[in-house]
Length: 218
Image 1 (cartoon, rainbow, N blue to C red):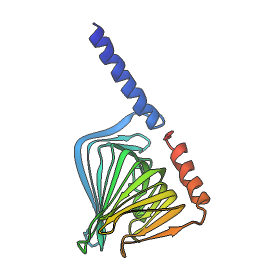
Image 2 (image 1 turned 90 degrees about the horizontal axis):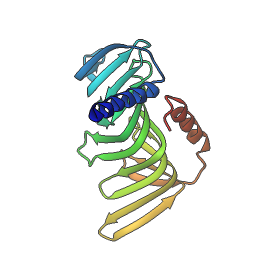
Image 3 (image 1 turned 90 degrees about the vertical axis):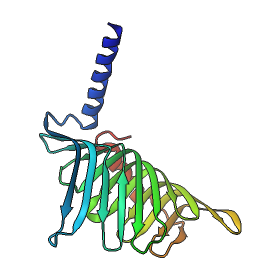
């Protein structure tokens, strides 16, 4: 009997968490397990593909995805985005909220080493190829590991900006070096890092407001 009570309690807790996560969007309109979908442009070239363990679309069109893997296909690069869960507020694949274990990998078509980004929560603006977060970020390149607080990454332009407390650890034939700055910018096209000590309060506040007010992401 105790096992059944525990199981029921866990199911109720799980249900409540999902309900809170989606701001009580109402009943489920459709649900698909182990799905995959693609979007083509007018020339029938793939713009993006999405797959996951579970997709739920609610009556108000909010879409919830478990274990999403989104691939963005561009002329000069391909980007892979993964997380534990994702929420699409409009259901139009325009603005996506990625939650927990967010992983971004940008692969250039020139066969240069990929860039990997890790954070906990992030907002992905699909049509703008833009990823933003106010959380801690780790960026891994061929010879360096860079950490910071907050990020604005323009994937199409190839510019990744760490907004605060940036610290880069470089390993090469000269050994290990540490470079620090308020902000750091990485150009994935030229593979160059620059330090920018100008303030980024406005963009940090904008991202933080967006993250904390939407679906109570904290």
